[in-house]
Length: 182
Image 1 (cartoon, rainbow, N blue to C red):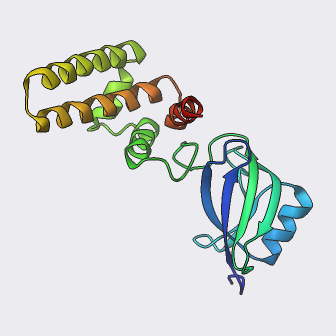
Image 2 (image 1 turned 90 degrees about the horizontal axis):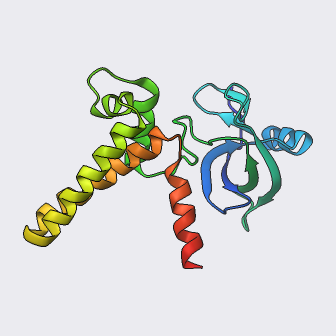
């Protein structure tokens, strides 16, 4: 039976400030979190309490837990030990394309172009990124805006696959870009 008063719990990386996930907590989940120093939530799908990372090892050490001004939502500032999302992404709010690439890398469907690229290894994916970059430059110099957009999309897609092939998260690129504009 679900708890009577569930509150949304926004989980934020204490170091980067990135929003990692949204989960649900009641008084018992909050008590467990405060007592253990690790994030506990109520699973609406499984109808049970769960400690984040109990099966994956991707736990969250809670540095701060606070209510919002109305007391109807919580903010957890955490130090994650691995990705927050079940897809393997740092955040559940990663770009949709990144989530798809992570899912294909994990499940390796036979009919997936992404899975086939990843099977070829990092060097093969890197060559494909180079090819797509040349196609973008060529389109930029001599083709329509629509072709530039299409080639840019190809390059971004293949760049994401390259990051996945190297075991990197797109969030690392976002962090670097933020660092550069400061």
